[in-house]
Amino acid sequence: MEKKIILLFFICCICHGLTIVSGAVQVDFYATKCRGAESIVQQEVQRWFSGDRSITAALLRMYFHDCFVRGCDASILIDSRNTRNKQSEKDAGPNQSVRGYELIDRIKSRLEAACPMTVSCADIIALATRDSVALAGGPSYRVPTGRRDGLVSNPAEVNLPGPSLTVQEALKFFTNNGFSLNDMVTLLGAHTVGIAHCSLFKDRLSRSDGSMDPNLFARLSRTCAARGDTSVSLDQSTSLIVDNEFYKQMRLKKGILKIDQQLALERSSAGIVANFSVNPKAFQQAFANALIKLGNTQLLEGRLGEIRKNCRAFNPPQQKQRQPIPPRKNFPPRKPKNPPPRKGPTFTIPFLAP
Image 1 (cartoon, rainbow, N blue to C red):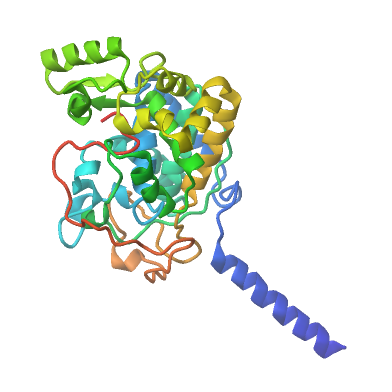
Image 2 (image 1 turned 180 degrees about the vertical axis):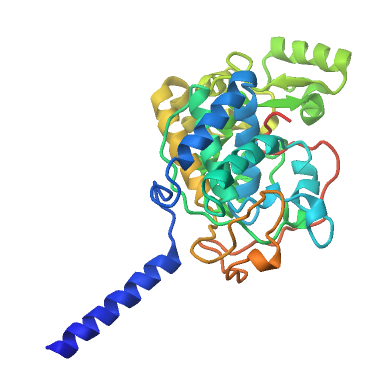
């Protein structure tokens, strides 16, 4: 009997150890590790939002661009000067107009003062995005946390879908990362607070093919001709509010980007657009679920990766915990078909404000 008790205790200890090592993401991960962490994030986002409501678009774009390259590991935050080859994901064409880094720095600074080396930069991006979406009128949802920060930031791995793709071409990028057609249509709803420069849709203004509302076609033609590569709101009605107005406009042929308008014209996605356009609650719920799913892409957990002290730089060797280059959760890293980084002010899905 005594041997059985000892054996049972030994097994429990092993299981407990495995639980600690696995460190799976969960809601309220920091409840005991860093009490008040989420409140700190919320306070800083609220402070920034009060002076710049476009931060919602910026954070949504940062969140997407980070999670679609090596998963949600904050690799997009690394400055090129802090890498061995003096290049990071920030140098890739699609990321050169990503912004919001200063807000992440501000949040990290406060969290380091409260709980040193505890809250990951990857979790900060996820939480800040969630809070900014809620402030902009979008859904309020709970974010699982416990992500770890990555150890690689390579511009050659940035391979994101562009604005002139067809629905099926864009869908390949999403399915390769574990997302469905419904997920893609939902995540593109981030364009409800986005902008795009004329250079991203000038091909649609070269001649009218009937896919754009004539009045919008005329107005955009005048705007882009007069001001050069200026920017316009992708949602022409409520450009700073996270709502379903974007889908209503797609059904009226008021989509500015080709991929957006194709969502309402393509048979496979038109029904989803129609549903969101008349059912705002359905969009809000789907958007929250899609953002949570996005945040669970190829996670680093447990002892993989690290908790950075500075979001812009990998920890120096003496600060690193056990950090093997991981086999990723969910999906293996993908090798892009066209690895060389693109230069210039290129916007990509979700084409949000620079």
